[in-house]
Image (cartoon, rainbow, N blue to C red; front, side, top):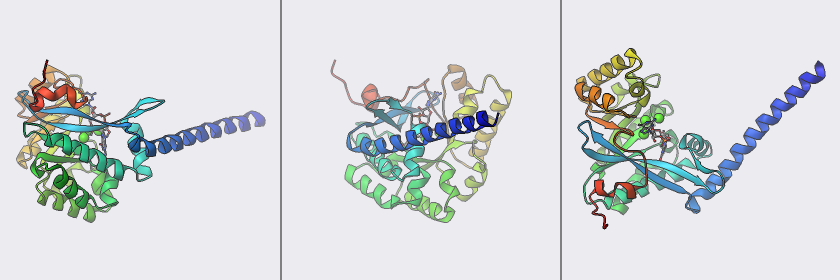
Length: 274
Ligand code: C2E
Ligand code: CA
Ligand code: CA
Ligand code: CA
């Protein structure tokens, strides 16, 4: 029995080794991904609840030469761990701003910022630089942050947010309702938008509690004069509910999936030759 136990331990250990090796491998590959153009920006439309598209969220994609598409939920934590997210974050910001600056219609573009970008590097300087370089009006840029940004060095993050806002950039609170202290953060910073997490939207029909939570978030946000965008809107029934509850905006497969901007050229005002 003792021997069997030891064998199991060894087997468990080697599984952990395997996982660790795999993470290291992916991290190694990620360093090359930037230089070798394996990273892509997908764009997902954001619309008013009446369907009028008002902008796009930029979402990272990694097309790994062997593994194919690796989901961002898998590689972003790795990039945060080794700090590579600072470079990658700058890259997607530049790509998204450059792309948006080329659109005939002055739609907004939303970019996600990692907490690591707030703690390392000079985020304000690089955003300022990218805006100058691409010529995008700061008022067309929205940055999406999660409460993770405010968990580390709170004062530093808060000061940075204030300076970004002073540049004219809008700040959206992402994944609202999923963290531990979303409410207290509303108290500490004047967010320009709240994104209700998709988990509440996807449970709208099935769970009566979700509908009440969405109503409560909308009531709270509106009392504070903050517009709300609902994430993960997939059905017309969800859209109808949100419209009835005076939610301003929506994002999700109902409006459009994340894709290369080529798919959305008509929406950004580029007339496509056919
Ligand atoms: P997120 O910022 O909450 O992005 C929304 C996620 O919901 C995206 O997943 C999007 O594809 C997905 N989604 C959109 N509409 C629907 C829908 O109707 N139904 C369902 N089921 N899902 C929908 P994605 O692209 O896999 O990104 C996952 C997460 O990775 C993002 O969550 C964000 O936290 C992170 N991420 C993506 N791009 C970046 C980036 O450039 N920088 C940073 N720091 N994080 C990023
Ligand atoms: Ca987001
Ligand atoms: Ca989100
Ligand atoms: Ca999320």
